[in-house]
Amino acid sequence: MKYKIQTAASFGWADLKTSFDDGKTYVVEGYASKKEAWAEIYDIVIPTDGSPSDYRVVTIDTPQDEDLYQ
Image (cartoon, rainbow, N blue to C red; front, side):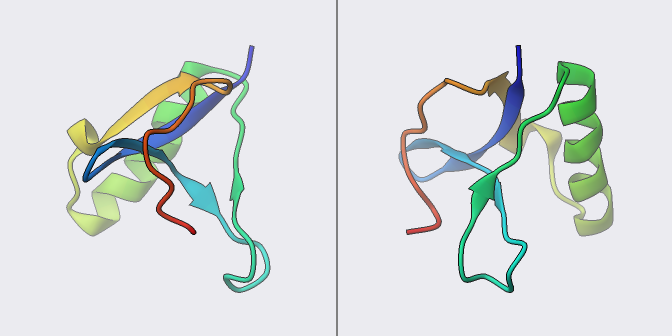
């Protein structure tokens, strides 16, 4: 089973996406384990002084409530 990261949004949860082409397109990254996904969250949170509670790890097929990258 694959996992993805969601971030807190105004109306629920949104998929965290990555761009590999300077913001032209964004894709959801899949992780092989919850542990791997949480490691990525902490890589994001620590340098930005964010809060881990603003993120969650869910299965790759969990729908998002809001799309922040439209």
